[in-house]
Amino acid sequence: MMGAASRQCGVVTTDPLAPAAAASELEKSHRDAVIRVIEVLRQGTNPGLALGEMARIALISRFHFDRLFRQIVGISPSKFQSALRIAHAKRLLLTSNLTALDVCLAVGYNSLGTFTRRFAQMVGTPPRGLRRLVSGRPVVSFPHTPGDTEPRTGQRSISGTLRFPEGFEGFAIVGLFDTPVPQGHPLSCAVVTGDAPGFTLPAAEGDYFALSAAMSMSANSVSVLLNDVSAVGRTAVNIREGATPHIEIQLRPMEITDPPIITAVNPFLLRQLLAQKTLTEEATQ
Image 1: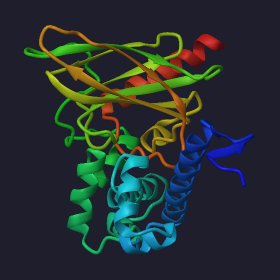
Image 2: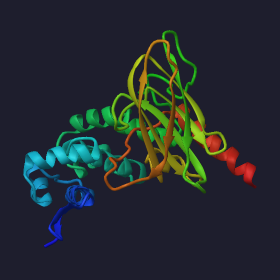
Image 3: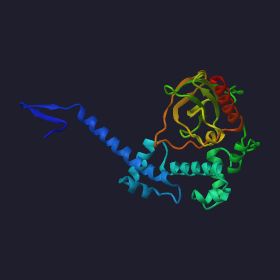
């Protein structure tokens, strides 16, 4: 009988790889269970699944599933499902002529007021404001211009470098957030390309997450607002008095366990993105 330990010539020997292999199999089993649930969640956002239903799909207890989901994905199952709903709402608003009420009902909300508040909180602008970004009309709901890279009074700055995948042709947005999932307004953000991978982000002292999303050069205003990204990266940032941190973010392909990126770029940054894209295209012609 094979196992972590075996008896050879009267001597007990221990296989040092057996515990690691068992742990690896257990981790894979846990990840597969979470992925099964995410696949179901991504198939539709209405009417949504309760925690108990998700746990049954994963074939584990509610408590164990909730803990595993947070550990593997980084946020709770309910927040992940809510982000999927809002991401679906963004797509409907940007690619259809449905009214805000129609979109609200299509993604499982019963109250237009609740939907509008939740959408504005997670995206950074209400549904009507998102559509105005595509049309080029002013959006009064953005309170600041996070595309600025000059520190304000009392702020410090973070310098950083973005590592693009080999052979990648496109651009990326780097933003600073209070949470590990990019929602609402970034505290500051910048556009980065492979030719100039360095960036600077102003911020006050505190603990943050620097998050990056890369898009192909074929992206237009709609795909930028939909966050049709091909690679992502994230790192924690600690800003303390007397220190100017330098960070590096390695971009990697999106995975099914990555929460949807639902934050909307503001008008200034959108113009900057599209202008950078145009300059790059002209330089390659």
